[in-house]
Amino acid sequence: MAEALWNALGAGDWQAFSAGSDPAGYVHPMAVRVMGEVGIDLSAGRSKHLNEFIDEAFDVVVTVCDGAKESCPAFPGARQTLHWPLRDPADAGGTDEEKLAVFRAVRDEIRGRIERYLEG
Image 1: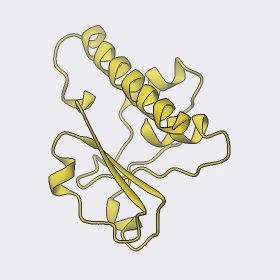
Image 2 (image 1 turned 90 degrees about the vertical axis):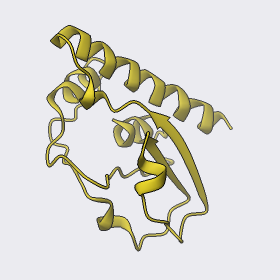
Image 3 (image 1 turned 180 degrees about the vertical axis):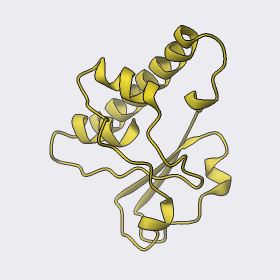
């Protein structure tokens, strides 16, 4: 969700990539659904491991999950590193509607943080 939101909000001025230290191997169907609600299609997205990007130079590296700050390796080419601890919506329990509510809340939190960063 973060990659797609940053790319959309960056309006062509940014190119975002998303990866994880333990990727699921698929894009969660509820992420696809809640992003579709805001006009972003994730259906062709894929889950990526951060090792795909370890040697890349980035302007900004953002970790988003609670344990990610400790489990992510350093990106020596990053000009700036930010940690935004967010709940992993894939861990949400309850009914499908309750889970969707968590996915929406996390989507909206990511969007707000990106908007604040870009307004800078």
